[in-house]
Length: 275
Image (tube, rainbow, N blue to C red; front, side):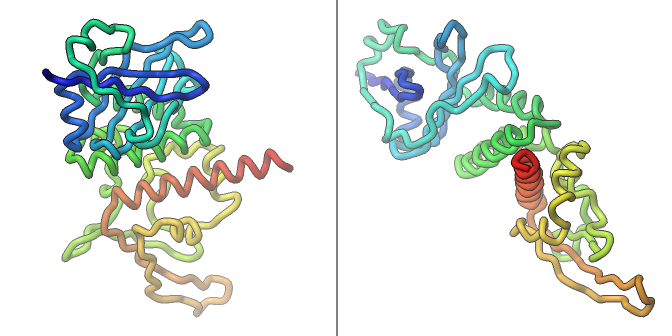
């Protein structure tokens, strides 16, 4: 007899569960990733969809997100984020699962619905609030890491659609890699906001440059090496130092830069709010 599985987690003092059909349960147990949408639930008079992301394997990651249909990003969140082994798992005969619609049989067996929803969440806060955008971007980057490990490219496609391909801003280096120039006085010869794929609003721009400088910012990005080339100090008051900034993986650098910019902007806003 084929075995399905009922997965149960808890958040907000409420129980949430989903039943994986035998084929999907076998996929998860074998180590394959799976993203599905549950039957949804009601909370304080409002309906929410539940989105379950299995990293693969019994000790793999399990994230359950929720969202109100047609609502803004304030109605989206993470209910459970941990390991599948931390959930309650009960294997049941498939015929029993078919007779238990209340258990929440999945209505889709692809991760595409989840990525589509998440793309809308990020797009809705590209111009703020930046603390929410920072949380969403960190979550997206985590999804990309999981996707690369499982061989799926959908999350990378979502990242490219939202933020673009950063390699187009750099010079190609003979022998491999990329680079861009910078000077101590003028900063990088590329727009760091464009590289990160962020919209340079006044709030974001002031939040970053009001409290830091380009050298410190790039120091938070391990994917770039800043190498001093030469200095000019022959004319009093017009001295400068010039650099090459070497990048091996433009996408990884853009992710680190994205986080560094948003983190600084959020910290600046928090500091201003405490004054």
